[in-house]
Structure formats: structure tokens, C-alpha cells
Amino acid sequence: MAATVETISNIERRMTIKMPLAPLEAQIKKRLSEIARTAKFSGFRPGKAPAGMVNQHYGQQARDEVYSKAVETSFGEAVEENKLRVAGFPNIEHKPFAEAATELEYTATFEVIPEVKLGDVKKVKVEKPALKVAAKDINKTIDVLVKQRVSYSLVKRASKKDDRINIDLTAFIDGEEVESTGNKGMDIVLGEAGRIEAFDKELTGGKAGDTREFDITYPKDHDPEVLAGKKVNYTVKYNSVSAPDYPEVDEAFAKTLGVDDGDVKKLRAEIKSNLEQEVEKRIKARVKEQVFQGLIDVTELEVPKAIMSSEIERMMQMTAQNLQQRGMDPKTIQLQPQMFEEQAKRSTSLRLILSELVNAENLQADADQVRKMVEIFAQNYEKPAQMVDWYYADVKRLDEPAALATEDNVVEWVLRKAKVSESKVDFDELMAG
Image (cartoon, rainbow, N blue to C red; front, side):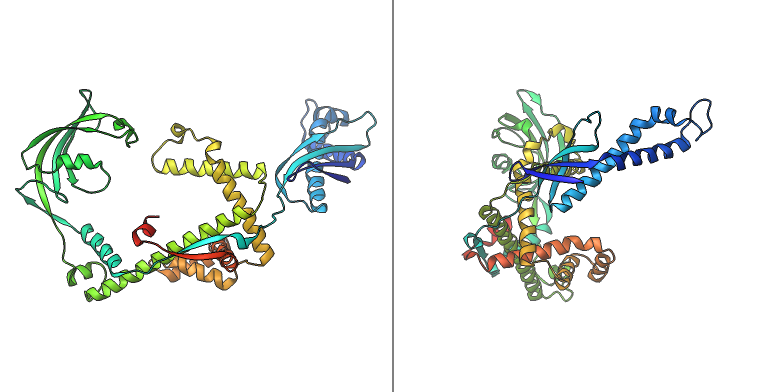
């Protein structure tokens, strides 16, 4: 076998391979003999048909099988011999046989995984969020927990913010009732998120037994779309008004949150510890995102189309599955490859860069680092020790924690070289993003 490689572009190669036909002809004869043993022909017992008849019916099949196998094997050997990293599948073109041909010749055009030349990591800029959990942050969290445990009592006064009202509501657009809005016995907490502010304003001040009619004009970008940009006429009948009763932050409250002795100071300490862990996790995620984007920005890289296509297809499949799990039909969304091009380019670029960096700087996570990551995963479960055992029962389950631990090594390596600064952030802003 002889192979020559031609460089078409940075990531494209054309390989011409020639191999003698004589050994292949011998393989074709052998394959025809195998077929002849079981081939059935009218008037002949299996295996007794004349060779010419077998060749006439199965000769092309045998040639196709042998040539296909020869191309597959020779291409793999040539790729290995020339130390090429092929991306995707090659496009194979056979040279037509001459009358007295002695060689099988074909060309394979394909993409290769490009050589990744990392840019100057010292140019990467990382702004690390700085935040210490304060008493006000703990208080806000306790307020949320208090509101989650609210109860309501009927009152005879007019409704106000934070009250729960029970209403019969009907909506009309241009005199026609909006489908699914004829709601009777509908509970609404005034001022809660998720509704247009003007709607709650109109509902404020009503008493049980009252009936109100009002118009709301919705923004053009409102969701659901059926109301977007429309003027909607509402008719509302008040059935009841209930005032909120918030629990006191006391021993009983602390016990409902798992503090056995009801010590409120212990509750605050636990909340602070949990918030600090969440803050640390979010800061780490922000730093990691900046490091990865920085690596992409300083590295010039041409991503092979084959890898891009594969990544886009994977993303489309995952999106379709997610839509189905949410009860939506992916066909109605009309997913298009171009929707995922930018995201696919980023993810494939990052994967190639990380692979090169891990190999070049020996940043692969060691066994202790993988173990630590597994233990972090296991903390989210009721029985952490059993989850650790579950991960180690199958080596494939360690792929994800190993990959994340390796990414942590990359981040630490970059941070030692990059331009790192700190900036104070607000607790709510960090939690929101």
C-alpha cells in the first residue's frame, strides 16, 4: 500500500491510496467460496452450484464487500502512519479501473482536528466577585422562609398588598371571551411576582361581594402571546379577602426547619453556612466562565465542519428532548441548525482548547481530586456514603466528576498567569445571575 497526503487547507486533507489488486482478488475468490456453500439455486443442492453461476449472481457483492473492507482498513492504517487526527468521516472517491488494472486506487478527502496553538494566557482578564454574607442577607433569606410558611385568615376589609383574594374572573378582547379565563374561585396573592403590575393595582381595594370591571392594555412583548399588545376587558367578582398570618421566628419556627432544639441562633448559623456555600459556588462558576471565555478569545482556532455538525445535531436532539419533557411538540418550534451554530462553535472550540491545555500542562485530575469531586456530588443526597459507593461501582460513572475536577485544574492554572482583579458584588445580584 502507498499513501500520499495533500494539504488543502489548515483543516482539510486529501489522501491518495494505492494497493495491489492481486491480494484482493484472492480475497474475492475466498468470499465467493463462502457464499457458494449456502447459496441456493434452482436445480442444485446448496454448495453444488457451478462457480460461474455463483460468480454471475454474487460476484459484484463479493467485490463490494472486499473493496469496502480494504478501503476501511487501508485508510485507518494510512491515517495512523501519517499521524493524522481525523474529524468526522472521509469522502471516498474511487478511481475507475483500467482494462488491465493492477491496483485499487482511491482518494479520501477529510478534515483533521487542528493543531491548537494557545494564545498568551497572561492577556486573559478575570474579575473575581468579592462578597461576604452579611446579617441582612441572612434576614432576607429568613423572610423568604417565613413567607413560604404563611397562612391566611378571612377579613371583612378592602384588599391590599400581600392579601389573598378569591375571585371569579372573566376576560374579553373585542367583546369575545378569552379562552380559559372564565375562572371561578381563583386565588391570587396581591403583589406577588409573575403578573403585570397594573392588574394587581386594579384588584387592590375590593371587598367580598364587590364586582369590578376594568381594562388592561398589555405590552407587545407580553407572554402569553394571546394577550400581547391587546386591550383586555376584565370582569371580577370578589368572593373573599384573606390577610396573611406570618409565623414568628421563634423556637417552633426553627424546629420546622430542622433545628432539633429550636435554637434560632443555630438556625441563623446554618443559613449563613448554606449561603456561604452557595456564594462560593456562584463565584467559582463566574470565574470559570471568564477563564474559559478568555482562553477562547486569545486562541486562534478553525473548527472543523464535521465536529461542528456533530455538535449542532447533539444540541438539537437535547433541545427536542427537553421540549418533549415539558409537554411541548418540538415540531411546532421548528428547530433549525443555524439556531445552534454560535453555541456549537463555542463549545467545540473550548473542548479542543481544554484538551490541548490538559495534555500540554499535565492537568488531568488525579484520583484524590476525583474522589473529592464525587464526595461533593454525594452531599446532595440523603445517604452520601451510598452515593460514593455507587459512583465507584462503575468506572464510567466517574467520567463526569473527573472532567469537572480537570476543569478546576485548568482554571487554577490560568488564574496563576492571568490578570486577576476583585470587584465587590451585591448579594442579590450574585444570586440572580
